[in-house]
Length: 333
Image (tube, rainbow, N blue to C red):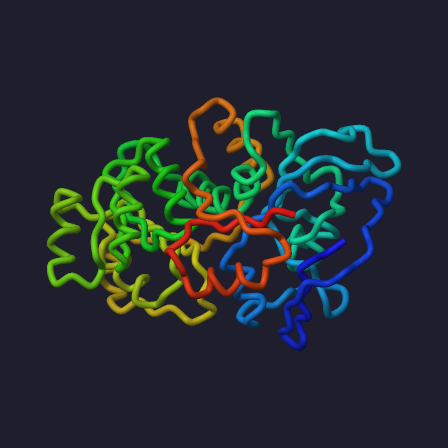
């Protein structure tokens, strides 16, 4: 089969012919129906992210996957061949969290082997391309909103960065009743997208009247929650300034750089908080699949392009260059 392989030591990514994997006891082989292309994949190729627990130098990328059960391994009774499933983006093993497509082989391939416990039944209603992006592109903002930030209905929430995560963040905030939802992005097309996904306001962070516009949108009380999906220092500084009393800044985007609180007195006086967030928890993907099956969520406009798996290298370049300002590119084997 063909697979998109990265050598983490040399940084070389290429499509290669590799053997079809066989599932051991407790594992399942999945015939991949679709696999998302995430900015984290680009960052892995660029060396900005590095696997912590990878055995060896090479890994097949891809942590957003949906497909069909092809072959259950010995002892697996929870699924049968032909079942349509979504694959969780990782699992815990010996006290550490392993990430698919980072610490072990992922879904940029025709077949994938994973533990049976990471499979979420999909049903027949959701197409593979839409289902594949639920792990990470949707579950990461859902985890940030529902767990880390603990957003409540009626709270004012700012969303910085309306890319793949931020766009779904807006959609999910609308679902749970956050109000107002204020999207912040320097790209006009991204601001238009935010409004189409349910934002009440869409602001340019570089505008001279930004502070006034934010104050007007929140009625002068500031934000209850600010979500940083960009991982940029300037975003975090601006978001902190926009928080009101007991406001929470949630860091979803990864920068790897130190963060400075410029006015620690104001930070303490207003009882502001900074919370870190990474990925999602095991219950988030089943929740989202259920919401989508019930028609509460629709990911039809989230898939910006469907690209043959063989063209994964071009997909990476397109995403890195933000060609067409995509929400999610999806590889189809």
